Image (cartoon, rainbow, N blue to C red; front, side):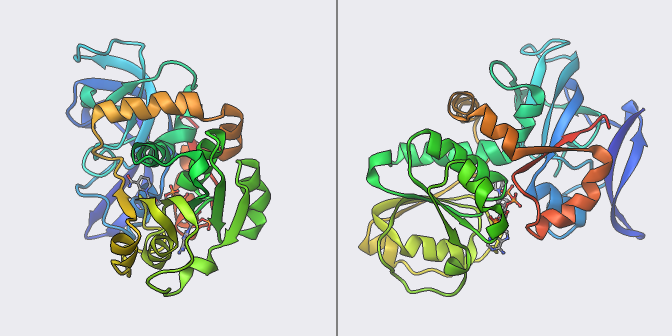
Length: 327
Ligand code: NDP
């Protein structure tokens, strides 16, 4: 038997609860992992509360991330005792995920955890941190260099924003952070932000074009914020869009794209090809200061996750929340 969070949806309604499950209930897969840690992502919070259509099959163990030790493997790349990480691939949505002491998954979804991160640190990175790295890689791929100018990071006190700020500042970029929480200003500065702007400046309906300021941007908010970010990019600036914390809509005009040659790059971590994932994890190991990661990642036990999900959707959590599934 093992402990897990289970989401059910039947005549009794949509609900998440702590349960004891049996190994025989685990889904199909060629690798069984004894999970040590998971982490609470925005998508997990949507799944647990039922506020977003994240879960596609019921009952479901949520948790899009996990790290642990291989207990049993029929996959040629993995043997008993290996430490492995999993981010995305529909885990916690279509296939049982990381909020459990055990998981059975497709070995092709796993990444070996070698090198600098401990299992706990790998979950302090988690999908949010790996997505932040995908955004940085996209800025680089589109030629944005530190000397080109300031990089805007929205939702800076949250998971993606915190890690993006830490990586970009370490790489020598000047980071201007956007946050709605003045009480987190010291935290955001400690990650490397040079300046912090109030998110109210980006909230309202803006003009098609504003004063040119940003060479690059990492946006986790979407909606009017993303539209205003695009409108204030410098000539040929690059915006990476990965989130919808402020809304799914995008009330923008084409002006920034056709008059300033702005590039809007979409970032998806879930189905991102394996080689790009390996590159993202290699770069995280190189470019993310582990002492900053310790500041970013707090820890809770599995039994604390359900109430925290609502707080996350209210924007009350800071940085990343690592989940020790064994307490
Ligand atoms: P968090 O909840 O940790 O952070 C989101 C931050 O956004 C908050 O801390 C807050 O920052 C800001 N925010 C929240 N609500 C609003 C609002 N209404 N208007 C403006 N700003 C707001 O989430 P994550 O960082 O983990 O994820 C951020 C987004 O990225 C989510 O939408 C998530 O679904 C998405 N995501 C997408 C991935 C992909 O593959 N594309 C992968 C991972 C995440 P502050 O308090 O500083 O203002």
